[in-house]
Length: 516
Image (cartoon, rainbow, N blue to C red; front, side, top):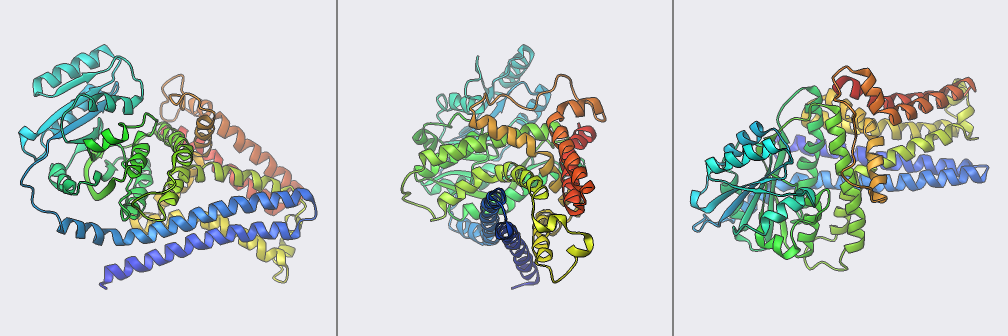
């Protein structure tokens, strides 16, 4: 083992240990609450917290497993590549870009760049799938496609959103493979087809997904990039070891027969995850190529991030229930962890939102309970002979670890402590928005609903920031009030606890104010 491999192994052991400590610290604290409970209320609260801690613990332990397992993927993919034969017959490929009222200049620039892909020109056909409702956009893009020899397809309605747009094209195209790119993705490596198409020599390969990455921007957008960075560096490789990588909607290529066999893209908000699941059910393999071929536009505003996360969590919640309803009793191919893979994928953002919100509510109830440690003085609390000291320390450890794990991982793999802190703060800033998406999906509210604004938010517009974060700001205010009430009741520990939570939820307004 060389020095770099040894270092990576040590880093993974440290991270896995932190995940496991985080899981058991939360459960130990909940068990303590149950053990000292003197009322039915406290028993119920302890059980509630224990259930949350078990769910959170299982999620963290499985995340640690995926994280450690991803270490072996590079060896696996290189072995697959070594078995590929040079192409003697090139399958036909459709290159598709989906568009909806985007800036025509950007669309044209990125589309023209795609036309430089290295591949026999007579085996590639380009499609622009335009759902735009603005007359100028339509006429401009249609004329552009005519001038470059691309096929322009426009729909009169947006039924099925992006999935419906793609399905409309699938019914019309005759190519064997379909490569999909988003309007904002600028190709940086023209070998995309040369590198991905050979994997389809295996007739059971349904799609190949490459690593998605946004272009560099400011500190905010570069921090946001790490959300996808963790997914593509750790989760995708671990899943791909079972040939069940998630198709991520773009920068990927799909066998058309796979789409035909599964009935096209399921017309949901996150059509890519639903398609990945149906592809697995139909016994196709999903591969992941850990290489960046295109850069998307950076997410430079907090509002844009909220819209993205709202859509993701709405779709993930839809998928969670879709999976539970449609999960087959047996899968001919795949790992025994197949179901857990999809459950954790659907549960992921809800873990970072609904679970954290429930933990916050439980914290309020704990602070205003009759637990012994909530009424200790600082000197009594620091008494090492007191059991309360040890269990309160465990509870504090759970919270501190929830802060430290993303920061440590970000420092280890992305060389930045500041971005790790930003990720932690962003997760709290997004909790209410993600939870609203969860509730909206449960109630089957129109998925086109999102973070709405009456005017464009300018950077440093405090009035707009307050208006657009009224729910988060109100919840933060409630936490501040409860923290103050606890403090003046001589519950200093509980007061500090709730005041700190209040500051974390206040981050939503601060982010909207600073980043728009």
